[in-house]
Structure formats: C-alpha cells, structure tokens
Picture 1 (cartoon, rainbow, N blue to C red):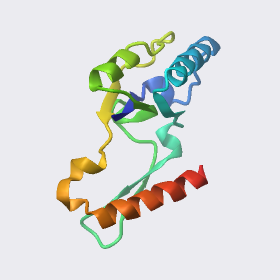
Picture 2: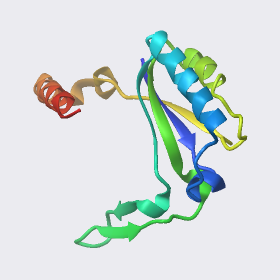
Picture 3: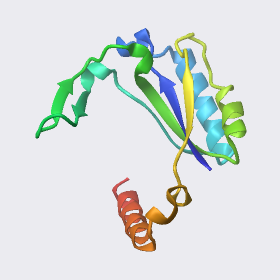
Picture 4: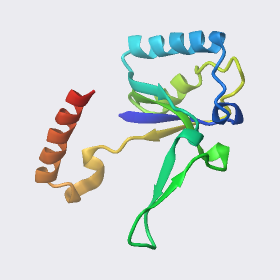
Length: 142
C-alpha cells in the first residue's frame, strides 16, 4: 500500500522560515532511515503559499486563479512523503518517528493513495493500460 504523508504548514513555514541546521540534519537522517528500510518512494518540502496559486473551478466559464498567500495556515501543506508500507498502522509508526526539534510540526496527515482496484469496474482494462503508459512516460520526466 502507498500512503501520502502530509506535513501541515505552520506559521513559521508560511513565513518562509527555514528549519534549523539541527532539524535539517535530523530530517536527513530520518529520510535515510526511510530509504534504507525501502519504504520511501518520494519526499519534498514545499515553499510557502505566498509563492503559490490556486485554480478554482465552478460557477463560471473560466477557472478563477487566486494568488497566495492563503489564509488558514492549519489547512496548508508544508511538505510530503510517499511511503510504501504494509498498512496504515505501519505508516503511523514511521510518522511517529518524525523529528520535531524546532517544535514547528503541529500535525501530520496520512492518506492512502488510491490503487486501480479501488475504482472497480469503472476503471476498465483500456483505461488501466492508458494510465500505465502515462506513468511510464512520466517516470522518464523525473
């Protein structure tokens, strides 16, 4: 099973404050542990929402573009990991080990990534084949 582990933003991360050298070193060690265990597929930190945009659909013919920053810091994302583990419980155990030296990480959300079988018969063999081709093409972009 794959899970997206979502690091929620804090006032500090939204203000563009960079983590301390100590926390960066601890996070590097934690990421090493994830990679060595074979569970980390990806992981990145994100810039503050002031450097982003939202595209809102609905109600009009054209999507609305909203420039950051965005209100409600607790609803924003500061970074993520993609983990491949056997269960939600295993993902939780890994996340409980996340370094928090600076005390800036207030909440981390864990969500299972949908797999082909989650879509039932609606995800036809033809759609699955097209999706697999796209995944392979996207891997070449990385």
